[in-house]
Image (cartoon, rainbow, N blue to C red; front, side, top):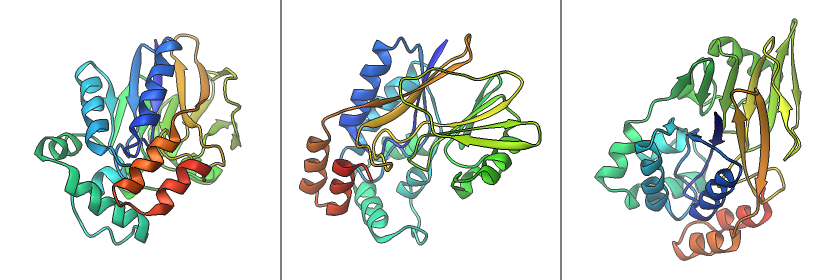
Length: 246
C-alpha cells in the first residue's frame, strides 16, 4: 500500500488541498497526518473538516504541539508570533473541532511503522529531531522499522546501521529504498509552512510493499494563503514565511 505522510499543515488549506491532489495522482491509498494540523494558518476549521473526513475513511492522525496549544494553556514556551496565532486559532474552533483534536493520540503504529509528531521517547514534550543523537534516541524508543515524524519543517532522513546513525537530505522525486536490515527515521517536511528556503509544500509517500520512500515538493497558491493570514489579522511574519519558505 502507498501511504501519503503529511505533517505540519498549520491551517494552510491551499497547501493541504494541493498535497492531497498530488498524492492522489501518485496513487496514494492511505493517508497519515503527523500533527500540527492547526496554528499559524488562516483556515483551521476548514482544514480540520477535511481531515476529519479523511479520518472517517481510515486515515491515521496524531497530535502536535500546536494542536495541544489550541486546546488551552498559557503557551509560555511559544514565541510571541506562535502564541498570538494560537490564541486566534482557539477563538475560531468550536466544540466539535476541539473534541476532534482532543481525541488524537500522540503516536500511532501500523505494523512495523510508527507515526509521531516529534520525539518518540516523550512525544508530548515535543523534542526537535535535529541531530543524529536525537534521531538515535527516537529510533531506539520507537522500536520500529520506519518511524515517521514532523515538527522540524525540514525534510530529512536518518538511518541506523552498525553502531552509528547517518543523516542525509533527500532529493524530491527520487525514490529511496529503505533496506530492511536498517532502522529508519523519515521527516517529510512541512505541508503548510516550509522553512528550508523552498516555499513549495512538502510531504512524502511510502510504498509498504516495495519499502520505497519518495519525498515531494508541491507548488501551491501560497499568495492566497498569505493574503488570508493578513486579512485575519494574524502576524505579518506568518504571511512572509509562506512567500519565502523560511
